[in-house]
Amino acid sequence: METWAQQEVGHAQLGDQRLTKRLVRLVTDLSQQPQASVPQACGDWAATKAAYRFWDHEQVTPEGIRAAHRHSTVQRLAGQETVLAIQDTTSLSLSAHRAMTGLGPIDSHQTPGLLVHSVLAVTAQGVPLGLLHQQVWARDPAQRGKKKKRHSLPISEKESYRWLQSLQATQQAVPAGTHIVTIADREADIYDLFAMPRAKSMDLLIRASADRNVSQDQETEKLWQRVQATPVQGTMTIHLEHRPGQREREVTLAVRWASVTLRPSPHDAIALHPVREPIHLMAVLAQEVPETRPDPDTRQEETNPPDLLSWMLLTSLPVETFDQAAQCVRWYRCRWVIERYHLVLKSGCRIEELQVETAGRLERALATYGIVAWRLLWLTYEARQTPEASCEVLLQPYEWQALYAQIHQSTTVPLTPPTLREATHWIAQLGGFLARTSDGEPGVQTLWRGLRRLEDVAGMWLLLHPVSSAFTYG
Image (cartoon, rainbow, N blue to C red; front, top):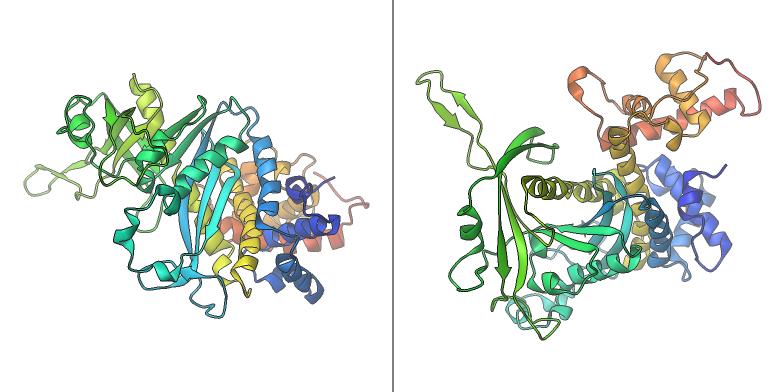
């Protein structure tokens, strides 16, 4: 029976089957101990040396690794009526690796590092399916202080061109006819992105940044003015997950929308295409409704602090009904998944702590760890979306048997595998999850800690209960 790593990247075309086998071994080892150092994850010095040689091999390219994962990702798209292609950029801070070559500044403090722009395919319900595209680059230190001059450059020579490149790569990767909705934050509010030719099956859902002129007949009406002049069409409630600086909470949103016409402004980058016609879109505004509560002294109502959620979304999707507008809001909420993906890469897989000598080697390692990060994230969201599925979509029989025995302190295991929800809760308990009623569903951090412990537990189980031998079932 193939392991998940063999199914995921066992078909990689790296020019030598031995390299493909090494990739499968690396992905397997790193996924079992994502937080561990490479030597700890690989288990011995020979395997560790093989890992570093793999990332240094001239035949191994980051794109070759990503292509294998992308192939498996596209297969997972089958049967999905709509797929969300979420774009986002993150930076890798490598200030602890001053000797590493090929880096560039990532901020105004000249911190050395790399920039990473990813496109993550996600189901309409928010379950990550895998990466469709990824770009990695280092800024040129010589360009520091030339921000004003960059305004006059064609967009193809600017960093913002990454949004257009990723849109094109998404279109090339996804089978024709699949409905793809590209989702991005305010950095992607670029006229040329909206103007870029795309397939009829592709739509955009971008959070607005600029308060643009949007009237078809005059130049004075602005985006926010236009939409806020329309009446609220209804309210909806969404769940916001915990994130740095924000607590987990339920949010009630008032929703309104309007048709708008985007025109290029003098501040837009020089166009990739010379013809710059007005673009007709729908704008959906979702604004948090302030909670009210009685004041104990005056018994009057007071509102929350003014930092309320407000999303202005520009979309090519049809918006004629409240349900269509609410769908746009729910899909945009899924953008948080790619931020979680980058968080897992940096905090879970510790990609910024890898001891490699060049940016090229780091990018190969990033492509490898990217698969591990997706797998961890997929587990978290899949368990919430299909809790009653068999845990064997994740675990080998000996793994769930060992897990059951450890949690229940029993050598008697059931004949049928537990559900995915049960198994992920048990794995999370190994990672410190208390599983109290008020604790909700386990997060990524407790799951990756639990998976690390599960490897030891399962290894001991195999020693005591070889696969070929019989043991007691309940």
